[in-house]
Image (cartoon, rainbow, N blue to C red; front, top):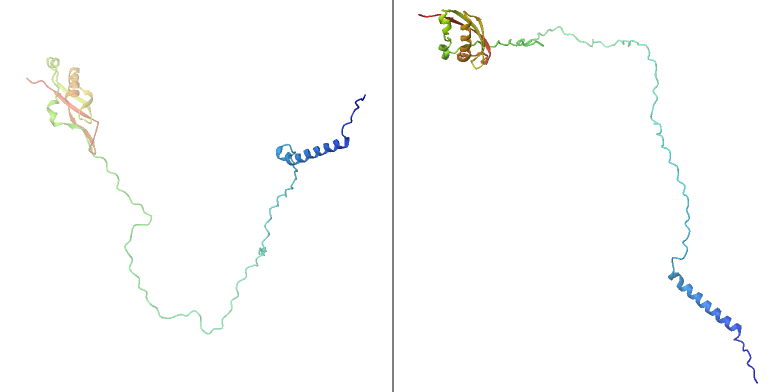
Length: 223
């Protein structure tokens, strides 16, 4: 009767050598493929900062003094001394004289003009030409006011003096009774003057203007 006995596996050195070959192949493949597949996993190189010193600003150069500058020296003036007269040894007098006299003919003076700096006297202004108001001949027959019946029955007679303001249109603008025989004649004259009287207005250099004039009326009864 035969008994089954345990058979040992292959020798350990052979399996260890095969494992080393597999690991070597994997490592070689990683070196060829690894940098291309995952480039971002590699660490970035460190950044080095270097301080560069800045030169200080150069001072502004000062202008050099001019070499041709000359310092003037003040000197005290000497007292005035007259120039000495040197007598000339010349035989002739340098300033000659002649006994001949030549008469000089002068032109006659011209007309006398206006005095220098004088002022011209202008003619005084002429006074304006004033013409007073007058009665318009076209309305001369309308100057006498009608006799009131009450004054006729009272036998009132006399002269009436009135002062009227004549406008630029020749109409009476106002009337003042200076003297009258009665109140009735005054009222009749006032109404008639304001409605019927016409005058030529007063003028100043031909330009009409308002002016006062005096009128005298006579009231007399006729049989």
